[in-house]
Image (cartoon, rainbow, N blue to C red; front, side, top):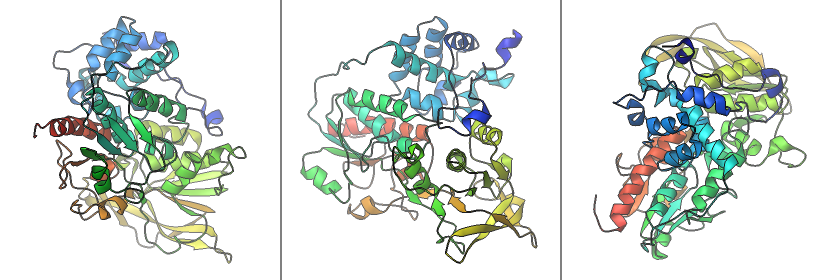
Length: 466
């Protein structure tokens, strides 16, 4: 094999010194020449393990073959047969743990850059075509309500609309997109990209109703009373989780959920154009090791912090964040303190954060997650001076919708119990998928759940029991 085929075409990116102080997209995307070269790396193997590794079952070798031929629009159309959000997934999907992880080429060399090619064809299509009304089958008259317009809601809505079902999406916020707009920063996923993919779904005939909190403004039972034949619940996991350590109630302590929502959805980063209050710390600590922690730390830096610490109780090997996000954060100057855990937050006489007290950790035996359990090292306590602390240690299930839906079973964490293959819940005609079922997970896994549920809902409303 030629040497250039052994490694991925590099992704062009903003210089770290520039991007650390702006909210423009970090990764700039492939040019046509790079996409063509990368597509030539695919060996078009017979077993197609990458397809099995994709939660939404994209014909990956097929679309890459079209890229290789220069048929970029054909490639985009083929991707969209299975994925209504290709521009989003090309940016935030953890391909390294899914399709690229099982790529045959990856056994000896670097796997094909499937995600980068998916992003390329989606962006190419947007730049070279005008949106057209989709050709849809005759309506079945079987109305479906989708609660939430995040990745799972958008996916199930698109699939059901393409099957001829009238679909209405109910969104609690004033903009559609769910976690794609409130959780993921502009520099990683521009909101214009999200709105482009949302527009595609709405172009399939899906109706969108904003500012509708299902469970408060309308209940699931009332939706059935209004004539909906099935309901799909995709409300995500938006309830913040805290450590329950002393000082978490001080001024200057945020959940990552609130911090990112203020910055992303409510546009605090565009002050003074948007006058959304947010505390711009000089010295900021973000606690946690996932993608949300990386997003919060890099956002705090861009909001003007002099120094941002990321405090994580395990080592880099155990970090759940995507490797490229960790690399980007380090390049931008985020100070990651591995094997470190906060034990309390200290405040000044006015009730504002002034420092966090941490303890050093060592790794013991693996715990239930399969990762080595962190164990405190006695006598290693130390202070880190900060004026803002952001907790990014996970999110839980909001109890509002389950508590207003009699007979809807949840587990001990408040997540809705649903069948893995169909999304079917304990309530007749009610299905669920994504983070409200799984707990906080990834965009693409939520979309995979939604595709399975769409098939099951179609069978249900058409009278074919699963």
